[in-house]
Image 1 (cartoon, rainbow, N blue to C red):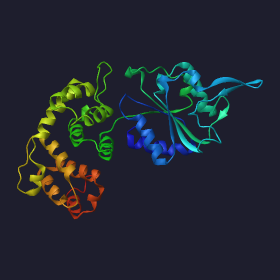
Image 2: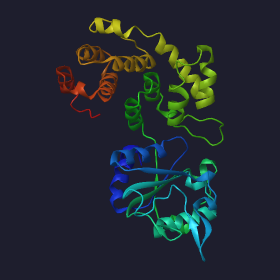
Image 3: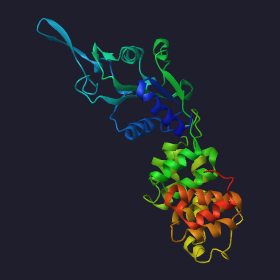
Image 4: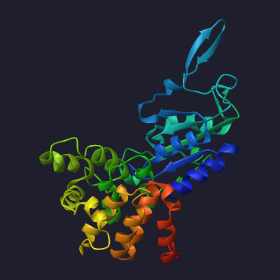
Length: 327
């Protein structure tokens, strides 16, 4: 299930507090999606990182008077004390031991911890990798699995692009992943490093421009792996030697149009990044000369980055010629 549909699904299941388990390869953004859903629902999200937890972290028996009572952890939402609505997120749940999974099963079903109830409006969500990913995931106990809806998460290029634009990821990374779509999330457990959405954002975009140029390849290789890093560095050379986008926008009807697809992808990203309401007609003029696919790429990227561009006369004119395209 792609990110946009997963977010809508989680929102739909929230009112009935259905327990959900989101599973997929490392680095896809599963945990981020849950936090974004909580933010959009305007409810708190309490995250518990399961690989570092012990059974004792879920409550310690203490003598109070003549009876043993459990001292509950600070993160557990107690009915009457915590907000009425929220999400309790067990991150990397599939790395939890059998004993921890038994505790979680009770929380999911009885919605209590050692007899203390959660508020009625809280939903339990867990995230985890699959055993096939060789990321330390254990087999999920059958009775826990029977108490949740398991959803397999899949990375989707358009959803990743939209997220990147909203979070100001470098245009070089966005245009490259759209050019080399197979390298967006190419996870192989046999490799030490793999390209993934997380690696492209945190290990490449955030690093780009902060390290010396001669160190870029080694840094990128340490984040996305040797092959993906080599291709990205080659793409960067093209991106950095593009015709000046500002010069193109001065004469969009006569400026040279490159023939190489890689150069066109890079130029589409550069032009879209510079698009404004004032120059959008010029952007569209040049984009139309790049051919249909790259025209759509340039305009759609620009409009995702700045939705107000769809209100311009230039966009209206462009959309008449591309009425069959949805983005």
